[in-house]
Length: 258
Ligand SMILES: C[S@@+](CC[C@H](N)C(=O)[O-])C[C@H]1O[C@@H](n2cnc3c(N)ncnc32)[C@H](O)[C@@H]1O
Image (tube, rainbow, N blue to C red; front, side, top):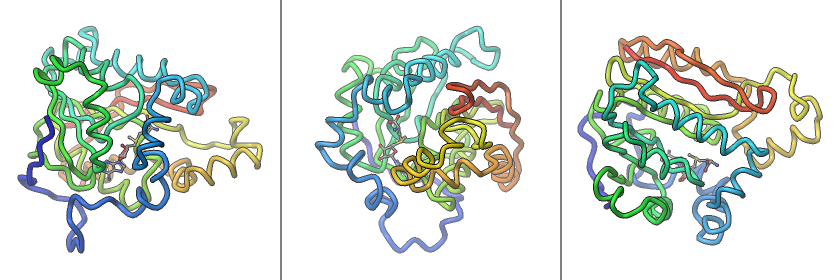
């Protein structure tokens, strides 16, 4: 079911929005229309083996490790977690997460209607009915109340955002997550010019051409940005676990929010 709720309260740095909160962000329409908005692009890219190739064979492992963060062995996982998926993702990640026993509710939203339609096709109908709520919502101004989820997950979204959008998305993710809850981030790792792809100029240029905001994301201090946003909300954030993949090219981070 797709719901289209208005926000209860928002505290982003967006003050005078000149456009509908459901309008597609410019960066998405300009740079990523071929991947996320075009029906042909959605059909082509939303296959696990394609996503796995794009992530150099690391997709299945990262997705499974992220799902495993919801296992009962993780001391921070109270069973029956309410989880926010901060935008849809291609492949099997969210269907697997929805099927997890410890996930009682999955609030999944995206700003592109085609992505919500697509994710509906991938999650089996009984699970969709029982556990999932799909929202048309901008991750920079999430249509959810403060502190209402136990875990929020950002799965390869941040590197696709311009800096100001990244700040808003981090702020909103913190806002909707309960004290004692977690923020989980799967994405590119920092670029310390050590990985082969980062050292070879031609590879670096290809990455930055296809992903225009990746260069900035590679160089940003994500933990410092999260801490600054948490501070704005009068909260604190601590890293609980970090895993790296493909010689530190990708990472999976788990944070606790107070
Ligand atoms: C999460 S990233 C996923 C990237 C990765 N390639 C994957 O599929 O695993 C792409 C999604 O983010 C959505 N998106 C981008 N900016 C958004 C925003 N501001 N609010 C909500 N959804 C957004 C796009 O519509 C798209 O569905």
